[in-house]
Image 1 (cartoon, rainbow, N blue to C red):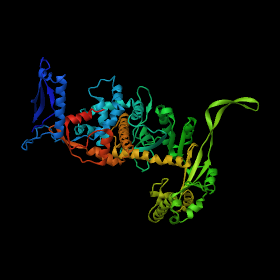
Image 2 (cartoon, rainbow, N blue to C red; image 1 turned 60 degrees about the horizontal axis):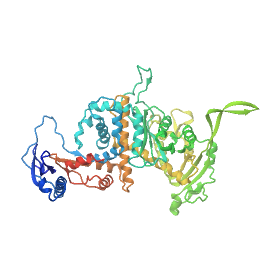
Image 3 (tube, one colour; image 1 turned 30 degrees about the vertical axis):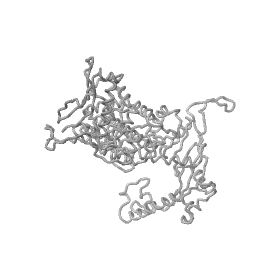
Length: 613
């Protein structure tokens, strides 16, 4: 088998009057030779017609290469040729993935290699840490698995990276030591890819469970005497899993692109993770001015106070059940409610009682009311005041200016009633079939509708008072905010994008396989999540780049396209595409100007794409 390879100019550079030839490489099996296939002319003869014979000769070679590209490559196949002898016990696939090259373009624009080189500047290592960083980030998207899985399957990438498992572990140890610097660098570097919209910053937490027999033990640092807390700890799980947990806190911008991340043990209170991470975020976000948005669990009084005193605004979900009775009275008194669409007065009872089929517009509308909920603040510093003619040093006080926006939706009202109806039926069935004590009790568990009859430990009945109390809140929703320069509709639209942070968690857990981490040491497990964070950032930057070019695709569509972009080698000279074209591929080709929609590729062409910046 042989191929016509890339043509180049050949001449004797030491000769005073050289002859210029067109030379081509020829591969025959594993042997590669060269052959002069055309004579351009002697230097002295060409000088009669061309001012610069060497430049003319080079242009002729370029012309012939262009013509060759148009005509294609000549291929001869020996059907009797056998595979080369190998001492490996297992046959390996020669298929190469080139879909990662789109991610590589984003990675290069961020110039992550410069940061990796900097932190390894004073270390003596026998491997290239920049290659490890790139492969780990891409592999978490293309083929997620353990670090050993990555090492065993590196050959699937066109560049054929080479390093050992021990090199990955050493790399992770160094990266862990620069955790905060790396997170800050990634945020700043991502702005080189697309313009970040940080007008609103969303925060939320999630848990990763680990199938261990017991939680990580605490230990004492022998040098400092400090107690180091284990990472995987038992904590609250929405799925009621009896497993140790690791908690991830995540800030994202308005487009759903990650901004910062923190990792804590599973027994740590979610609300305590916000302020330390937000303080770090403020340092890197331009002017530190943004709207903080989170759900009720992460919108405590201290968090609102921190943002308000810092000149920032907040929009947080407010639990109606936890409001004082005076505010509950204002919510349920059915006065001063207006329609969101036109600000006309409306009664909640009207919304609950009308026939939806007769007025679809009203059915899709919402009622709202604004209630002042300002609260006094005790400041962390003192001031002098005159009390009864005497100077006294007292803690300073201020006012947290905030309001509650209460909304009522007929759709939400019917949905919540429907869900509760099913739960009540299940509770009734439970009374007839088994002991309620056998069922775990939670805030959304059906057992909350049961109570012991007259203090009898063995007899349960439906708690009608509990059901009526919950029904009062059906259809109502509240947010607390200190924003006063936006319309009610604009403020209510802000929390609607919180679904994107849940999407980030889903991608990390499902598509990037954030769990299990396959690491025993706390530091390496944290670095594992840092690698997952890097991959999530790369993916989100790719996705938003597509969205901003009016081409939207789902996570599965984008990632599957990258995974399926495999090529087969034909003697390492020509590669044949083993994938089909698609709308997502065409969109990425257009954005990144990488012609990866061809059926055949020369090795030289793919190498040019690898080194493209």
